[in-house]
Length: 172
Ligand code: GNR
Ligand code: NI
Image 1 (cartoon, rainbow, N blue to C red):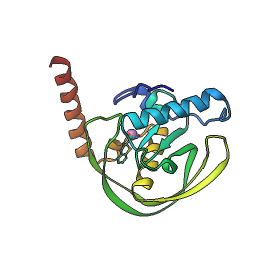
Image 2 (tube, protein in one colour):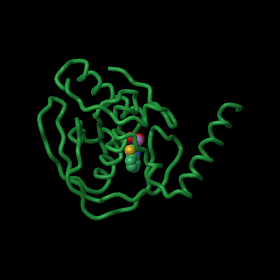
Image 3 (cartoon, helix red, strand yellow):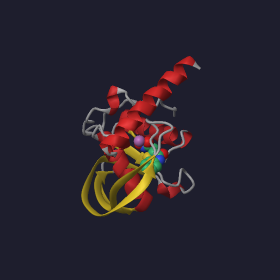
Image 4 (cartoon, rainbow, N blue to C red):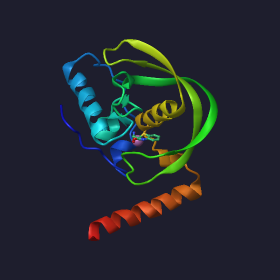
């Protein structure tokens, strides 16, 4: 097990469309999953997508209990949203955009089709924070960050603040 480096905005790996997983069964893949779970709990975060650790594959892990409930861990391989219902606006953050929190509007309930860590097909219905986290992670697999879902004015404000933040970090 290992804690992996989390890539941050504006790294290019966060912008790529990740490749479907075809080697689901092999041991290197199982090790990547374990390392991602450990990295998510260490961060701490409620989700982590493979591109955030520099791996451009369609894989993410989610646990909205941050490890409190051992049964709450989800490993989603090649996840796809098949249906959505209603909308909801809540604050989001991202381990790849540290220190920034903005309200994002997304569907409040979703149906997701995916494979588990052993390649078995599965489907789940999610709502609330779980639905939000899964959508945030699937966005990562498509090269989309939560700040891309802000309106133009807020997005420009974000970029300005982020640059300011980065340049301050260099001098101090
Ligand atoms: O830890 C995280 N919290 C969070 C809060 C609201 C909506 C989405 C998230 S996901 C985020 C971890 C992360 O960046 N996953 O990609
Ligand atoms: Ni994120």
